[in-house]
Image 1: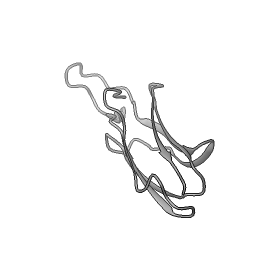
Image 2 (image 1 turned 90 degrees about the vertical axis):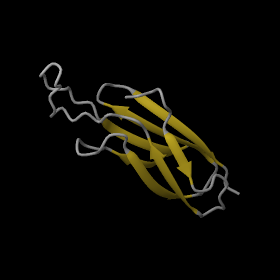
Image 3 (image 1 turned 45 degrees about the vertical axis):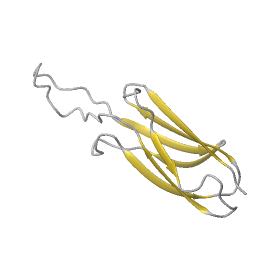
Amino acid sequence: MSTSKPPRVWVSNATPKKGEVLRVRAQMEHVMESGLRTDPATNKIRPRNIVTRFEARLGSALLFSWEPNISVAQNPYIEFTFLARESGDLNMLWKDDAGLSVTAQKTITVA
């Protein structure tokens, strides 16, 4: 998993009114190696290394989770919506087969 660039995250409104639908777009850099391709330099199968879990939480409440599979393209992009009910930190977490994790955070302030 590339940690040289932080994930890109966009939230439709960081200061929504209570009950407003918020849209979140998130993308991170990852090769998403399926384990089905051969490395031309070594002629050996490249080991599988995909993002296996994505979670989005507002505070401690789980808003969204996703477990992608090998058919997902590199640099996975995800989009989801939720109702703004309370203020808090929107925490996003990506985990891969190699055991690496990447996080991103946005603060949501409900008016």
